Length: 525
Image (cartoon, rainbow, N blue to C red):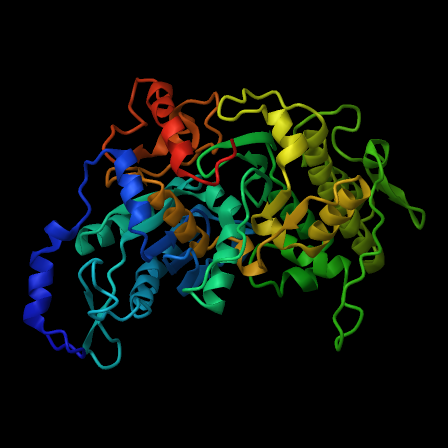
């Protein structure tokens, strides 16, 4: 084969032959391993794959020794489900199968070029043939593959996982299964690292966002309020047991939006069009949006129905109006929207715009009102991983609220969250939302979560399977895929896997908690 660098083919063969001696050993005492990794900090390179739903995503991320990051490749392809009116798993799997290999092939062209300087001490180079010239160039071999393991649609996840395993075997590197929701929660750290990398990858990073923090994980499939104590310790304070907020907004948008709007949509995520419809820009030259929103100043105002004097035939009552419950429910909001349109199917455009606004406003106020309850009401959780108690953390230590997931791209949601926190005496809490492109499913966040877990010493091996359900909360009472929470899907290098059938995982996990606190400087103690 022809190589366009000065690296000879015979030298390449020598590197390939010595591969087994340069790879990380599979069995090593984990505490010593993490200490060695910290002492020998260098750049890490991973190729990441995300196929949990209808987005086929591939990214290549490099994390420098300083902690700054550089995104060499980040592309996605979304399946067209408009004919089905929603995500069709069979269609999405077909698109994953068609598009993923070509995306990986394209991503390989973006791997950093290998030189004697950049390759020293790292994995042997990877010869990659150019698509046009057919000439091979030596590129940096990823240290490992990151891939979404769950939660998500099993068949969809399997396409990405099987591709990742194939790459890992072919390139003789490890593969790491990543928790999709953990990746969403860690996205603000990725944003900071990318900003530092864009400035100067070798310069020290600015003060990083630290644990503990609250996260609103809001998407078409999930609605969760999560308290993150550390990289691997998360408590779910509230969740939606049935319809997720993103799904409710999509369903409401299908009946609120005029056919002229839905027919021109590029995909079935109609909820993303709802804000544009409810708040059209003031002009085409200066497309600013004025929400004209007044936040509720107390709990009683939280529970006031949304109504408009000009349209007396309908109103929208907030969920859980008669109780203080740390739980989400969006089914009732969608039902009230359906009722309003059933009574008046010929509703005018201005009234539809107001109904769209009311639907979003009540849903978003419900999101932040439950978060406010968590800041003032002790959650019924066993705070076994932290001292002081979870209530103390919420009262005194939480300084950041992350909004992540596809719905986080909604500007009205961000405005309501910030305005309500300010009005209720929580101006000190920073509201963090990723750029829109990192709110929806993407492989860059999978790469970052993989980097963080890899550096902390967590592994999944080659034998892992997709997880349709996978709670991020290790105190979950569920069985099956939920067993053990986040860490139920990992093992520490040199230990047995935590997801052993028929055995309790608590004893294994407890053995490593203290050691992990010692080496993870961001864990709250």
